[in-house]
Image (cartoon, rainbow, N blue to C red; front, side, top):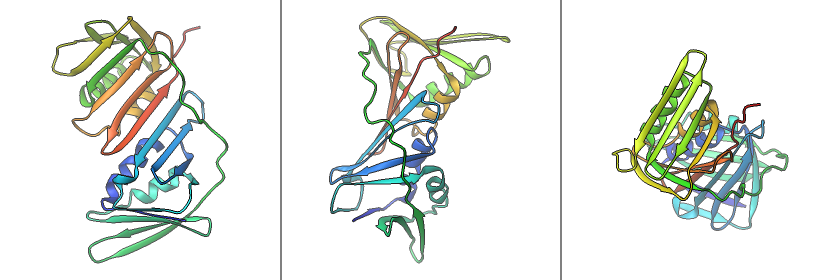
Length: 247
């Protein structure tokens, strides 16, 4: 049995949107320490790893560690109906998760069927990254949008003093570089130059939930999966994306 309450339901909605941008079903592991989820997207190209500590909730009562499998797309649709000034209570009832939205003078209850989720990712990919970059979220989102005008793929490049992107398509080419000491870059820590190419659609889905003004951390190794990470309040969201390799 568990009962969790979060005072700002829209905050939990935003957290779930960061997951459902890549995966349509998954299992939340609920322990006394907090909630976590790891899942691969249906194509097995990307992975999401989400965690949120118990302190993020105004009430957090968990009798035993439990796993809650959900259709995340349906879950997200319900959460999208969150209204201003609503709190959210979640509890398990008869193999369903009860969602109670509590407003200043109203209450709404949904019950969503739990599902058996096929065993998915349990461990994050083990990569010894050569480059660690931190950039403000908005410029990175703009860089990805710029690249999407040219191609379906984007190359990330990190060197000792720079981080940049490039894209190439039938209509043209793009290259954009940012200096280590520039206003957008918060950190460039490179042991060895790194470059890899990735699917733009997946990256767009990964960064879109990053809160305004937040930093995005990118870890790279040439032609290896990247790790992209940011915070949503107390919640931590990390994505892994396999590189695109030209045949």
